[in-house]
Amino acid sequence: MNRYAPFEWIAALRFLREGRAQSLLIIVGVGIGVSVIVFMSALLSGLQGNIIRRTLSAQAHIVILPPDEVARAQRDDDQVASILQRQSQRLRSIDQWQKVRVQVEQMSGVVAVSPMASGPAFAVRGDANKSITLIGIELEHYTRIVALQEKIVVGSLRLGSGEAVVGTELAKDLGATVGDKMRVTTASGGADTLIITGIVDLGNKAVNQRNVYVALRTAQTLLDLTGGVSSIDLNVEEVFDAERVARHVAAQTGLKADSWIKTNSQFFTALAAQTFSNTLIRLFVGLTVAFGIASVLVVSVVQKSKEIGILRAMGSSRGQILRLFLIQGGVVGLAGSLLGSALGWIFLLLWKGVAKNPDGTPLFIITLEPSLFGLATAGATLVGVLAAVLPARRASKLDPVVAIRG
Image (spheres, rainbow, N blue to C red):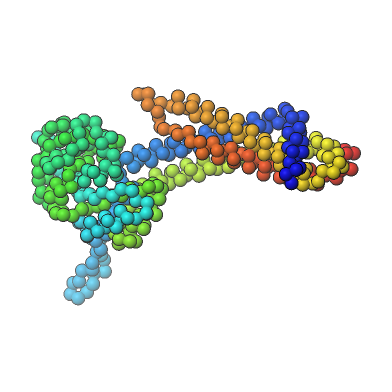
C-alpha cells in the first residue's frame, strides 16, 4: 500500500492546484469555521472559569453537617398525634468529628479539610447592633479552602485569642476599623470583646455584612460547642466532581454532605445550559464545514470525471481513487484548521486587549491552551476526511469507459 502513496498524494495535490479558486475558498471557509470554534471554546472556558472562581471564592466545595434531627410523634392519652411538625434544628456538634476529619482526608479527590464552629450572634459597638455569623476556624487549614489572605483589604490575617477578622460592609456598619473593639454575644449566653485585626472583602455584599472570623476555640466557647464543630469544609481536586464526592462522603460517614452544585443548583443549571448551547453551536459549525468540503469534492468528481476515467483505464484501482479523494479532504481540513487556529489565536489576543475592566485589569482570564488548537486541528482534519467519504466512493465507482466519453 505504501508504494502507491506517492501517486495518490501527487494526484490529489494536482487536483487541488488545478481548482485553485474553489480549493482556496473552501480552505478559507474551513478556517473561519475552525476560528469560530476555537474562539468560542476559549471564551466560554474563560468565562465559566471566572464565574466558578467568583462563586467558590468564599465557600467550600463540600460542607459536612450533622444529620437533621427527626421529628418524633407525641403521645396524648396513649394516642399518637396524627400531625407531626418538623423538629427545630438547634446548633449541634458533629459526633466524633476528629475521626470523620481523618476519614475524609484519606478519600480520593479531597485536597483540603477544615473544621468549623459557626453560628448566629450579635456584634455590638456603641449604638450599632448587627446580626452576624460567627465563624470559628483553624487558620492554617481554612486558608486552603478560602484564600482569606488574598482578600484582606485592611490590617492582617491574624486570629489569636480575643481577635477577629470582619467583612468590609460589617466594618462600615459598625463604624469600626483595624484595632477597634466590638462586643459579640450569642443566644447561648456567650459573650466576649474582640479586637478587629483585619477587614476582608469576600466579593459578596451580603457575606461581607455578616461574616466574622475568629479562632476555632473562641467560637466553640461563645457558641457553647466546647471541643465540637458544627461543620467540616472540604475542597476537591475537580470542582465538578463535588456532588459525586459529597454522596460518597455521606454514604461513608452517615452525615449530611452538601456540595456547591447542590446549594447553587440554579447557577449550575445555567452553566450546563451554556455549555450545551456552545456544544450545539460547535456541532452546527462542524456540520457546515463538513458539507462545504463534501460539496466541493462532489463538484471536483464531476469536473475530473475524465481524468478519473483515464487513471482507471491506466490501471489505477478503485482503492487508489478512493484514497486520492480522502487525501484531498484531509488536506483541505488540515490547511483550513491551521488557518482557523491562527485566526482564532488572533481574535483571542484582540479580545484580551479590548475586554478590560475600568481599572485596566482583564475582564476575565482567557488561557490560550495548546491542547485546544491541537484538538481543533485534529478535529477539522478528521471532518475533512469523513466529508470526503461519499465523493470518494462515487469517484471510485465511476466506469472508466463512461467517464472518458463524458
